[in-house]
Amino acid sequence: MKKFSPEIVFSSKNNGKSKQISQQLKAGLLCKIAPKVYTTNLEDAPLEIIYRNRYQIASHLFPGAIISHRTAFEGDVKLGGTLFLTYSYRRNLSLPGLTIQLIKNEFSKEGTSKYLETLYLSGYERTLLENLQPSRQRSGICKTVDRVVVEQRLEMLCQIKGETELNRLRENAKTLAASIGMKPEYEQLNEIMSAILGTHSIEVLKTASARARAQGLPYDTAVLERFMSLNAALRSTVLPIRELTETLPILRNIAFFDAYFSNFIEGTEFDPEEAADIMFNNRLSEYRHEDSHDIIATYNIVSNVTEMCFLPDSPEIFETLLKKRHAILLAARKDKQPGKFKEIINYAGNTKFVLPKLLRGTLAKGFELYRLLDNPFARAAFIMFVVSEVHPFLDGNGRLARIMMNADLVFAGQCRIFIPTVFHEDYLLTLRRLTRGGDAEPYIKMLNKAQEFVSKINFDNYDKAIKMLYASNAFAKHDEGVYLKMP
Image (tube, rainbow, N blue to C red; front, top):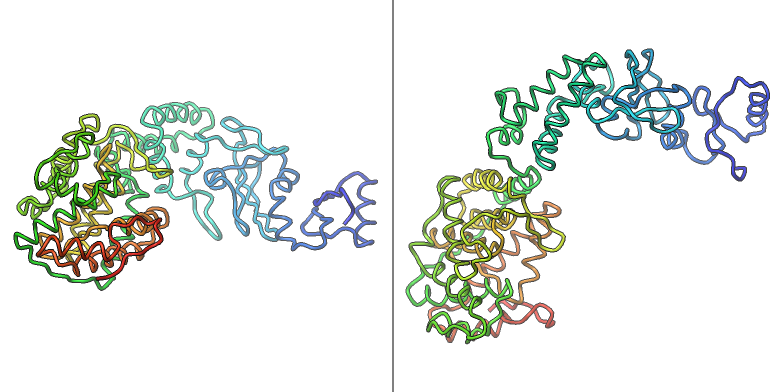
């Protein structure tokens, strides 16, 4: 290949250039890869060359064309796909690795912007209108996306940028549609937008997320996907049944360690002996007043059999129960708004939790899936993840999630689950894998192992229990080079 030679060469009406191309073809310096299109690249496959130069080729063959319809909506075309262009006549051109489909239109450039070389690109409003045009798919891919996809895009736009942006977009589209002859398409667009904004019947909406928004209970669709993945995994997994009758001594001791480890995970790091003095003797630490209250509040909930046997039976009761327990947990931290759902976005590292305006709807969707489960372990694992993933409060979400988990187990007479300090990293890593990749299996295995561990501890006697926990490395931190040992 000649140095600095362009990869793509086009035929020319110029006699001198045309003669030069013929000479280079005979000399083996050029290869024809499509009508009027040659390449100096004699190594790569023609489909690869054409695909990476797709817009340069389209610009040369159809100057002034508009990248439109499905291509504009999706942002690009995949290898082997169809590039849709609005042009002055209709034509299908099949090239290696690419089909160019010309859509005949009046060819107004209004609502577009200049793209590469001599091409134009449909703007956001024009793209929406184009994709609501009537379209019949005779062969290959349809020039428009499905109306449901348009609806999903608008619902997501409303979710991220708010109703003001949706109204601004609607006004711009109305003006543009009148100018370029797309009034019927605008009527459809307006119908969808009005329904999403709650000013039109929701019967026109096809997607559940858009209908939920119109009804005032929008939810996070990405989080719902994760809920469904976990729910399916729990329903298809053979899960353990580890029964435990909590006599008064067992209840006292297991509730203590439940509260202790749950607070330790959140940074309330007391020695077990100091924590026992705080919980059982109400001796608050002089310098850690709020931390002391956190431990006592957690213990007061998890040691209350009546409270732990109260399960939600509707989305409304689910909300009420979360707020009630959170108000008890964070009673000593008024700045964390105990018992009130968050009004600002909260984060954990790079993880952004469910937006405040979506949390009620997301909790409701999670509850719908929770009710489909009948195994106590499955219900416990699922509801814990729902609360953890939504993070409905400013603080205390982890502790609350584990309380909700153990309530299901206590109600069913099953062994509780708590996370020993040394097992903290396993707990966080599997939660992260489920959140970021939808991988539920490690999360289920982690909780199974944690419950198996708890089931082997003798909680009849406090001294025996704490001795067994120390021997199992339960109180060690994950960076101390030791691992959780089964008793």
